[in-house]
Length: 336
Image (cartoon, rainbow, N blue to C red; front, side):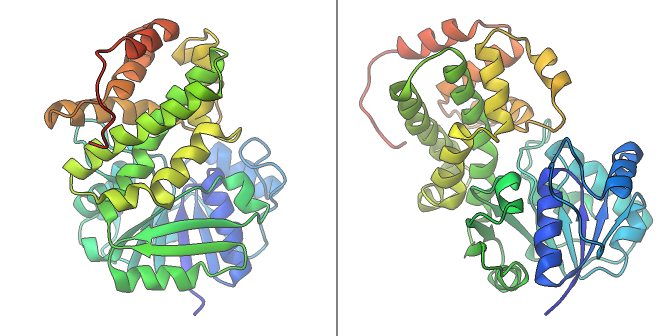
């Protein structure tokens, strides 16, 4: 069942997936929009800053030509930053008519302005793409550990037939894929957990302890559940791999870019300074603003998200934002 697969985006997650799928036996092409980044990959067959130690197999082709990379592919995988998915789809729409049978989204985020999930962006912006052909993979899956072949489990969500196909495509002794029909839940859980991970980083940066982290993760999950179920997700999805699994991993892991942003904020750095020093994108920064807009639109209470936004965009001191959270009116513990 070997496939011709294109991965759009050569960040750490794109590279890890390319390496895994090439090992399975698929034919891989990677597209990278930045010619300087592409030159590094072609010259070294690795990216020392994004995923050091992973040497790309000779069977993986690299290109800067979007149409060339996608033409004739059985499967296209989106691994570009969430806020760039729309422009990539628009370029594909303007330059080619063929749509692959299977489109896999790996990007985690909610588009600013439109407040769309990634499968909605692909469906709307890639002319001819239908929702049945689009699935999303999410779960606790840091690229650094997948590249080292540490056992990893994720979930793919969407049309059941397509999800079963994805399970076969990714079948590997160290990479297990479950399936779900809750596309909304899987996408929102994977996106919103990045906001909570920034909060977890702030807590660590402030030098606070495990009690604080445990409370933050628990109450963060409540916020994710409130908004996601209002938008059509199922609660059981949010206690699965794409929910609790990814939330805990992202909040506590040294590999988490979002937790890193929060940690540096807690230590007193300013947001722009932190982002300028980073090689890769922390999706939670833009998703935080989108989550706040969705919460307001649907009248959902999300105090942690609001507090993170105040630190990110309104120069609120992290310690003061935390104090406001702790001094809110007392209430019963509820899931909704």
